[in-house]
Length: 183
Image 1 (cartoon, one colour):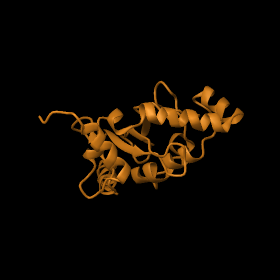
Image 2: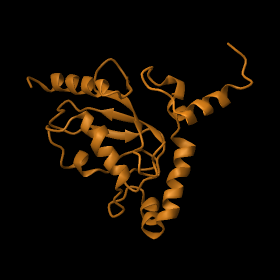
Image 3: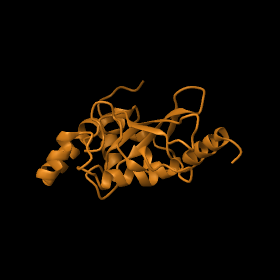
Image 4: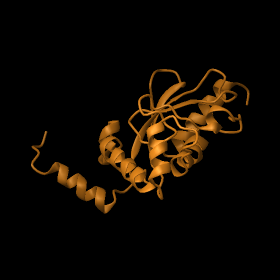
């Protein structure tokens, strides 16, 4: 790579080509939002989060700053700021990693395998260690309350045209339309 700015541009394009919805914050390519879906096989499945990404000038030699915009109940995510405690992003980042790794590997792994021994949310960590079933129920409640498409400014209908709505999404989108006047 000839320069960090070329690498930044290439990684951002690669992320967009991987079917992630990316919304630029300003004219530069250093700050943007990414729509992230909770991984299947986890209590976060069905949740949708808006992730704020900030790329430092020294990216890819310095790690991106990653934060959840809408609330998530997780031992390694600060509930108020959305900051993420993830070693691979905070301490062991390497220029070999890219933005697609963050969204396809690092964040899904964080949600699938929380680390309650290194918490940013002490309450979630304590509950997870004390009562896993209640913890998972609280995660699902947060997903319902804070992590639906309408919480990030999107609707199921806003999905790209090459994705089909599941029967559940189709039925729920019909329910929301009942009784509304045409614009």
